[in-house]
Image 1 (tube, rainbow, N blue to C red):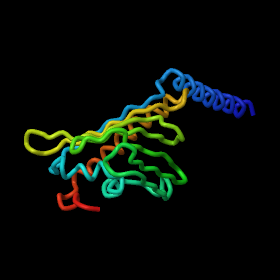
Image 2: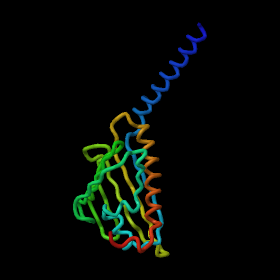
Image 3: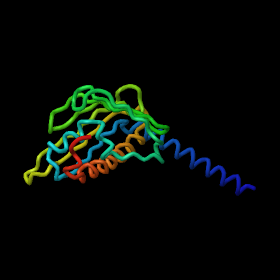
Length: 183
């Protein structure tokens, strides 16, 4: 009986220590994320532009996992490639919106995001650079803030967003030139 009691006490101590480590690290780690991914594509900036600047076209290259996040409903408003063009989604496991704040034809878009929030908490960009061999480098950058005490979550979000962006940009870079024209 004493052995069982000691094992229970040890188990409770380990759990309490683990909770303490999580709380303390949440306090001291920054609650911001800053994710970035790049890809190279044989598509020209002119061919990539309609794919990144028109949220109606994002379903051609953005992945979504229904099993993890649930089936999403999407609402797209505003004119493509202009300030105010908005993409919002909601599902059982995720919700948010992106709104273009700046768009430069064949160069990139900049956006404000409300990720798992009703108010803006993120900003980012998807830009295109022409490389010396004529190919295009696509760069997706995104940064934002989580509530205080969420440092561990911010670390996880940083790495998972970077991986997600890399996966999506890979799909975008693999599109054929004929895929980039029209809806």
